[in-house]
Picture (tube, rainbow, N blue to C red):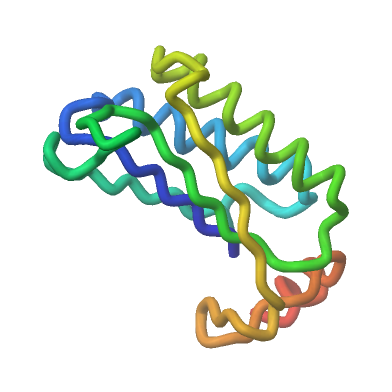
Length: 132
């Protein structure tokens, strides 16, 4: 259901660091939004060192863009972004000043997974049960 894209420069994160971060993002999302972690997708996008800039200068931040379904409370969305930002810094060793987490949402009706339109928040169990 949700998709988190972590953008960094090449070689910023080792394979084991990516795995640990993906696991932690899935855990945090599942806990806050009450869905199985098996539905949480985490993608790592690595750019050449001269392809990521901050303030007009080459930089190596960790940028996390999360997509979730509309309908979650503002407090939960803020908690989600905050906990993920903290986890990114803790797991990667990148200072929190170099971590940016942005949460975006759209209606569940605008997304399809496994050939089915996603359920509205709170309707996940019925959606999973119907998958047979």
